[in-house]
Image (tube, rainbow, N blue to C red):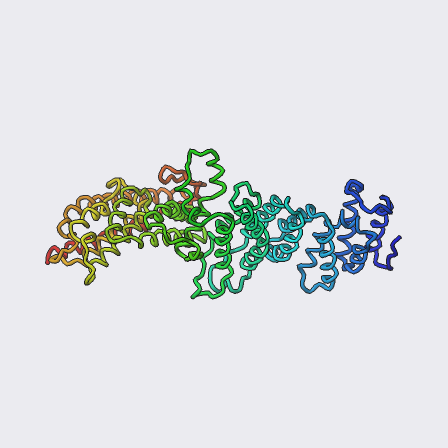
Length: 558
């Protein structure tokens, strides 16, 4: 029988329970199965052990846990002490911490790996919001140790662990500035670094499997779990992060994380060109199409495109053999997706991040074209696009190309003279005439007005290099007059709505419909803000329109 020292009451209870469990089983039996114990036994062991640890009796618990006579009991029940042990281990100054660390280490060594995986992930899931990062950093290394003990049967457990940890990491605030990333107050950077260390042996195992089989198998379960992890990491947190360039932040854990995710994908048999062009290359009629959508989420691939072509991450492993036109075709779906997130996330803090990423990929693709190709691309996109934001961005590019062409030594036939005029007529028009929804098409309308104002100021009437002065009367009829009429109708409508809203301010809520989409009910205060904002927008359009009319009238008198 084991001899126990004189201890406090809580420890005496714990000793008594161990003593009771020893007598409940064949004392001389070398192995004890879980079925020898009842749920009550587990509850008593957990309750008494927890009380001892919380009261600072870690030394006594350690002496009982490491006693060879108690090995089988600890092997079956020890993992139930993870919760109180983790709480103590998170307290850096706790005097009981060294003993609890020894208990924790012993439990990791002797307990069932399957039960430890469940127990450790429970602690990750149940972490308080202000302790998520500390819990993850504390438990990832022992979790890795336990998973490696599972041998060939670990794939599903590795997947469960990665999914659980990433789910918690996604709750951590994303650093917005260089200083925030350096300070890492909320721990996102440390978690990303720890995740890379955690997943490394599993990636190496997949690489070895590929090396020995000399082919990449879609049925490799471990590879599938790592692929899921990489795709999830691209959507959260990397899609939300504004990565800093090396010139801004020399040592960036988040940039290192992004780089390593792309390297991992390439090393496990997922070449970056294949991923980038995945949506173009796949055959939609092939069975399993929906499975492919889940396996390769579009948002993750959009983030991949941004990391490659805007941040130039992992470009050293991306072959420079694909044509700019093909890359543009591959990227257009991702550009559209990132821009659409701009509208969905309109009221959220990371709005600018998403729009910037989409436009950056788009601009990088445009810049690869020759002048003639840009001209043809702009004409094509203006015909096919149904997104006012994209159209506005194209028109801004057209303005930049005209400005470049008007500079000394940069003359070209595509953005001056006869070729430019058809493009200008595409730009300087209202999609539905005076009935055009001015708010929905605001980006396009404002960029069109800015372009026209620029042309009238920059291109002298007697030079008329762009041909704008020859076409001004047509533009007045097709664009300026319908816009003026549409403005007057829209302002009258919204002013009437605003008056009604002020008179009926005591009503509870109202419903607003935009582009046949019903928005959630708004309070009277919200309704007033929306209507006033719309009228302010109309005033903005009108001020630019009035300036254009003044310039045209003044030039006409010269």
